[in-house]
Amino acid sequence: MLRTNCRTALKNIRNYIVDNSNFDSYGIETPASFKDCAVQLMHIFYDEKAKWDKRRMSYQDLFVDWLQGLPSAFDSLYYYNRSAVNDLGDILEETEAERNKYTEAEAEKMLSYLIWREIYKACEYTVK
Image (cartoon, rainbow, N blue to C red):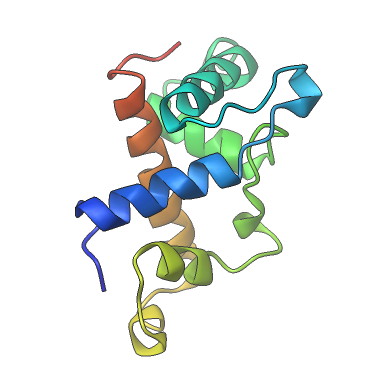
């Protein structure tokens, strides 16, 4: 099992973000680099959710809410059809026994946090 801040886990998270991003419906070619992909995701998140949502929530909580709404720019089906435990386990290279320590809700929360953290860092700690 990898720690969430080790080099291999960070690389796996970034690859997961790039692999699950799709900007075709926005008329944008999907970037191959993680940084460009993260910047595009942040812009789309801001335009679709953060700019219009007036609730007093952190950007991280708004981002998780946006992911739960199945945005077309990012494949977040781990909230509905796919197992978040398996996705998180693949990223952290966990064994079957290690995967069993998470419930689906805990894995969804952790995976969403890891995605937010890496996108936020790639955008140099700015939203928009």
